[in-house]
Image (cartoon, rainbow, N blue to C red; front, side, top):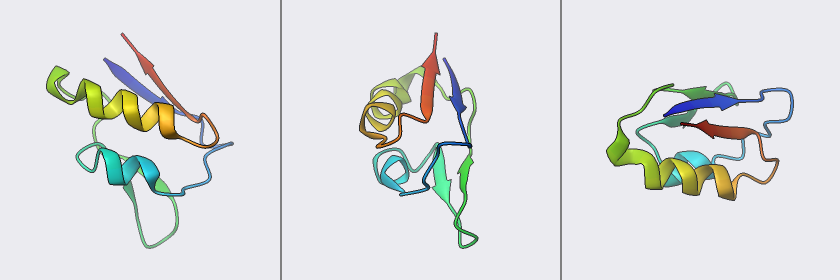
Length: 63
């Protein structure tokens, strides 16, 4: 699976980081960072939940 984030609409609310901290991180600069653009399959459920919970629908999961 591959994760993409539309940073033009990302609000950096941190919800994704709370659900999947192995993959997403909002740093002290206020920006979201993707720690693993192609996370392992065992993180799929967390990643898909994070994408579903994103208030701006900025996260896309492919594959």
